Image 1 (cartoon, one colour):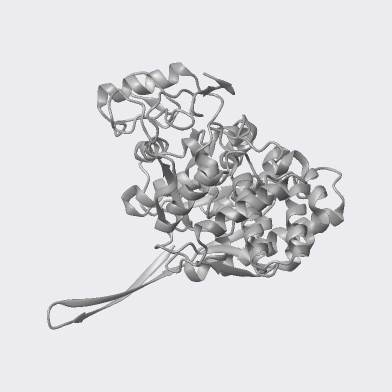
Image 2 (cartoon, helix red, strand yellow; image 1 turned 45 degrees about the vertical axis):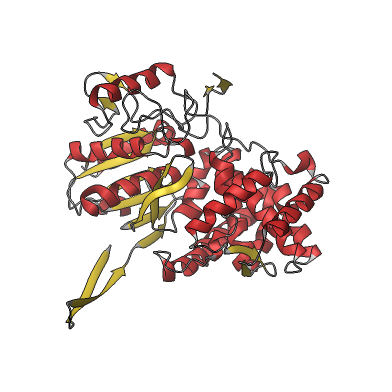
Length: 483
């Protein structure tokens, strides 16, 4: 929520405006947000008497009945837009499918949309809310570690465009975020590991006590879903709760003075200098946590080369990535990707590299004076170091699969339906209902899962970054196999 105060002064040749916007929003830790006895979420909707929920299909398959009973108990009419969003389906067509559901529902400008899912779902649905009437409220219930720890903290919302992450987006704060860590009980271990990377990120550059806890309890936290699985030791749950609370608090303290990223030196951008290339370039994308871990590990080697990070700290950090099963290298991370990633981030960061690196562990320095030779030398040394680690530094379950919605459930029939609908209408700006059905009978689930299966206003062609024809979203992979 925000309030704006402004002053207007007359000048010799016109006027000068000073505007100050107050942004306020809340976080509530609440295990069992959809349990009947917890009325906090329902109270947010009593005024409206109804709820439009945008949810991840996997989440709704698992929790849909509970969600429906919850709102039924509080006599709130529920309408649900189910979607499947993977990193390569985080696109304009997915965004438009949510917008169409908001139109069909008849959402009021101040009426909050309920967004339930991981960080990808909250990113796209949040952007739809930011764009719809230029400012529609929403409430977040994140369900993954990344959603709870990282995406929930920022007010950034976005979609990808072509091979560029978050190229189209906005800054739009939710009214409220409910943090329910019991969702982690049903999250695959691969996704727990994926989110663990974000905690290494913030702690290694800003909060050493949290890093110490991660280092002490690493395997237990991952194996017990942050202490939420039945039988998890109280000690592990207490440690996990402290890690989560302090990690989120630290990120909020770093982010809130710079919500609109006016300042581009950002501690929480550690691991986000070259990682976007790892996520969107490979035929089968790396998970976000593994992509940023490669970036963080390489950046740590760069910092060690400069003497900013001691050998002991460097080894400790790399060992934690390895113990967590996170990626520190990948064959596709080569000089070409390094050059392309550097060129792309320079544009994002106003012509400076601004690479966040630990200096020492638990604090941060930004590097701007690194030339190509130094970057290349650091990459060569990093790859040599990786030979001493399991799998040459490659992570466990590093690539997206069926647990990442938006990758493995669509087929060629759906891609053809999307093409036909676009050829007929000339764009995807037509009408779709909340279930993702294009009026006229073409079923598309709101989007073709993955990348490059979307027609983006160009009739009869599959575009959105690459020229080749692609099915099922993952660069020619159909249900996990090469098409």
